[in-house]
Each structure stands twice: as C-alpha cells, then as structure tokens.
Image 1 (spheres, chains in turn orange, red):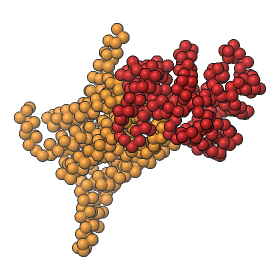
Image 2 (cartoon, helix red, strand yellow; image 1 turned 90 degrees about the vertical axis):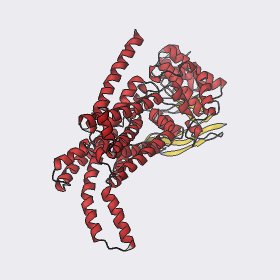
Image 3 (spheres, helix red, strand yellow; image 1 turned 45 degrees about the vertical axis):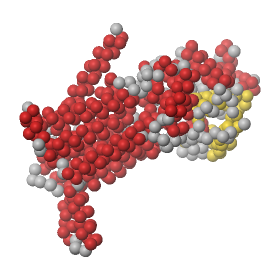
Image 4 (spheres, each protein chain N blue to C red; image 1 turned 60 degrees about the horizontal axis):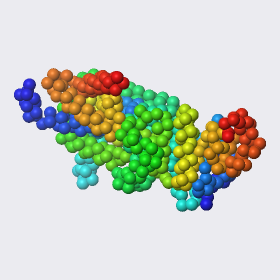
Length: 308
Length: 237
C-alpha cells in the first residue's frame, strides 16, 4: 500500500490535489461555525447551485471568446486583449467567482429584509441556476459525453485531479486570503455571530461584516467546487462545524476542532479515493459523516458520564 | 447634566406612527423605567434610542460627553444564543469591541476590564464554562458584565427579568440598583413589571394612549398609574 502511495505521489497532479484539498477543507471549515450558528447554511447551499450555473455559462462563453480572439488583429492592444481572453478561457474561475460573489450579496440582502420571502428567493435562485446550468451544458456540450460533464461539475469526480498550475496558485492565493481575513476579523465575526443587536449598538458595522462573511463564503464555495463538486459543498462547510459543536464548548475550541477535523477528513478522503478508486468528493463527505457519527456518540457518552 | 434628550419623537414602521410627540430626557445617574402595555412601542423606542432604527420625526441628542457607541445594551435573548458554543470569558470580552476600534485583537487593558466586570457581576467562577449551560439568572449577569465592558456610563436593559424565578429576579434588580447607586451608571430599563419599576426607578416613562414622564414619586399619584398599581397593590410596597 505504501509503495502504491509513493508511486502515486510521484505524479505532480496528485500532490497538487492534496495541497489544494487541504487548503480548501481548512477554509471551508473556518466559516462553517458562523454559518451554522447564524442560520446561514441555506445561503451556502443556494450559492453552490449558483456556482454550478455560472460554470455552465462560463463553458458557453469559452468558445465565444475563442471565436472573438481569432478575429483580433495583432496591434499591441489587441494582442493584450487576446492574452486576457486566453486567460479567461483557461480559467473558468475568473467568471464564476464574481458571479457567485454578486449572488451572495443579493441573497444576503433579500434574506435579511423579509425572512420568508428571502427563503423563497434563495430557493428560486438556486433551483433556477441549477436548471439553466443543465440546459446550457446540454445545448453547448463541451464534449460528446454530456452526462459525464454534468456529473463532474455536480460531484467533482475528477476535477481535483485535473487542476492546471494556474488554478493551483489561484486556489492557494484565495485560501490564504480567506485565512488572513478570518484571523484578522475573528473577534468581530464572533461578536456579530453571537449578538447582532449588541454589536450594532456598540457601533460595529454589522451589515459590513455580514457582507464580508457572505463574500468569503462565495469564494470558499467556488474553491470547493474543484474538490467536491457543487452539490456536495454544503457538506464540507457544515459537517465539521456541527461535529465540533458536539464536543467543544468554546467558540475558539469549536473553530479549531472543526478546522482540524475538516483537514483530516479531506486528507483521508483523498487518500482512500486514490487507493480504492472511489470518487474524491463523496469519499471526503463520507469521512465527514463518519466523523460526525463518532463525535455524536462520544458526546452522548460524555454527557451520560457527567450525569452519572 | 442631560445624557440623552429626546424631543418630539414620532416612532413607528413605514410611515405608520405608533407613538408621536414623545419628549423626555435622562440625566447622568438616573434610573428610568419605560413601562407600557404590549404593542405600545417600548421595543421600537429602545431600537430608536440605540440607533438601530430612525425616528419618523423628532430628534435624539446625546450629551455629557456620551457617544452613541458608548451604550451598554442588554438585549432580550435570541434563539441563536441558547445553543451557542462560547465560554463566558469569550462573551464578556466581546463587549470590549467598541473600545478596540480598528485593532483586530483585544489588548491587555481590554482583558483587565473584562476580568474586573466579571468580578463585579460575580461570574468569575464561570469564566471557562459554556454560556448555554448556565441558568437564566447567571446568563443575564454574564450579559450585564459584557454590557459594562462597552460602557461605564449608560446601560439599556430590555426586559432583563423575563423568564427568571422570583428570587433570581430580586437579585438581578438589586444588582442593577447597586450599579446605579454605587457606580453611578445611568440605567434605562424596559419593563413589564410596574410594581418593581416604581420600587427601583427614579423616573418613569409610561407610554401608550396616555403618556407620562416624570419622577417616580409623581407617577405613583398619577391617574395613569392607578389601575396598574391598584391591581398589584400589595407588591408595590
């Protein structure tokens, strides 16, 4: 087994997958606690569907851009434009990220004003994006096998193993940005999560921080789409947080525990999927579910012991 | 010296006024109770004072060197807080938020202040305990300690004794009274409980169809108070 692993690790794409997977797992777990406690989980779920739709649109835009690029001349400006276009063709994320961030902001706005209508708005946007995305993928197929394309984007079956070097660096950069933002604003995020009204009365700009949280979530979702695909992202965000909340009683403890748990599950999931040939995304989620069950049982045993 | 002056306030939602022409002022060291029936606009008034909502008309002015971020607020508990994983220490320290300004982390002074206020509210022994495991009265004391980290001048309390048993209610009232008398903290409290309001407060603001504002002594003899105090006559003493 060790030999098999060493053999796999000699391939750069396996190492990339492991690095990116670890970083994404870490980021997604950080805000999971806040998301669960603020009852924002549904926004994460809605956004992942939006990201799927955006990816389908990006897939359509690719050939269009390629066509346009061919018609460009070779003056200085036009070659510059052509290289920008080539970059956009190669990296879907350039398009998916702003769209998802924009939707995050919209969803947060509607969600806060009127609770029930906000729920309906999120359901509408997420289901609409899913349907339109599937439609676009069928109308403008990237390859002859449409259902495998759809499967890849929904469940991320192979995308983590086909990352380009640019995508790896983009992932690393965005993950680091998410971590730095989280650490710098940790105390504020705590205050806003625990008691919005108190924070607002104390002069904290709560709306700004809610916006920050939504934008960071959008970034995480676009990143995580590579790892587990858009349908399974919520699991990556929510499971570690809920598991950690069973065992720990301080915000710091829960945050650290969910980060450690998420990274361990992601590493375990990737390794198992390489060795057993299972799909990466669902193997990671399976590991998260197993961790949740173990933590639930341990918490129950702990509670029983305390009462006795 | 007036810390808060409200002139001709009209309050309500979307242009529909619940209350209008409301004027009152709060001086340093006062203990003002805002009483009134459900739906009379108590919570709306509280939100307006806190700056969470704009008045339809009229003005709110802060005096005595008080900025509107220097209010210590004790909100009613929300569903989120009831199962929130956080230690008492983390919660009390989060009251130092407005003092921290642009600094991302809390300073040594912030932490010292948090410890001092925990001592004052007698919750130091719970510092490492989880908030959700405390009793209702202990939770309110933790939130009071947090509010004191945000201010030493003015506390705004929104129905602080809701859901507490009589013994704990009495203890909490005495604690708030001590803050008002000894530490000279101005207190503005929303309350259902008129008999206790009359007992502890220096001033009463009764809102509803008829409005009363003035010292508690005058309120007890007013027409407005009679039906409320008569109904609970025994407890008022």
